[in-house]
Length: 439
Image: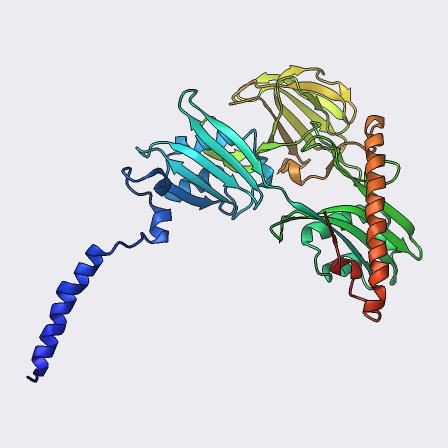
């Protein structure tokens, strides 16, 4: 029997309204990823279904980035941030870094939080219901080290020579420029044909580069400048202000400038707009908070005179120094003041002990810098050094590191010499880059 056109249309409509809805009801299908990340599922689901993801937003800190995930309350976000202050150096926060969090069954508390600033580092917080605090754990996955030799000839400027080379990030370029400018007056003595040499150490995880790379060695050989070289020194303690580049005599390869107020630097609250750790209100932070236990020595960052000291709310015990150029530096929340008003102090002189006086959540040092025109400056953007020269107690360690760097350099040069016949006539291609040492 031949169906008429209207019968065919009727049959099609019947399929659309009966068969297709039945398939949607009977066949399970996953929740769209975007919806899963933007809105937590109901509390009756399993724990693994409640993980939410977020990332550090441009120009924002942890607080606002967490609040942006799904409208969490400020108290929840501040609980996470205050638990991380002593563990994560906030000056290294970058837009795009990812974190994950897990809600309690009632959705009122973040019970787990994981922050992964890079592919090998994991900061984890787990809520301890008995102690009513977050337990912290740091996980760092092992990496392989790769040593690279980068050398070349200057045609215009050192910066242009480095900028035109592959494998040199802007971070490495800035460090190389800064170190070499301390070794030689490039504006006056640099000439076309002068040569530079860098020994770079990379970290690799599953074949991927983990930034930042480090410059272990840098040298410059010029027609008028002569030969100069610098070495990287790594101190025993993480965050030590002594880690940096020095010449063979242990002299710091950085322009004369302000010193640091502490022997170790770990930023718990950066310069700029933030959520106040006590009030939770958004306000401008005119300095940086540095992690420091009660009683940690605090040093003057440059020669100056004590213009004010004492106690005031909410700064606690404080010192204000005025320096030769009119710049003023501020040291707040101290436990003990060791200098008096009108006293002249020298650079790196111990002037106080850190504490937790005033309006604070934990011991730390607030450090601020004000320019002669009254403008507040970001202390982490002002060039600072530990001292003009490594102290005697650190020179022995430095000499051992210099010997190891020289061995690495010799190994790379031997590899380059063996491979040179294969690449004759290719002046811009650096042989050592093609065959780095991985250990």
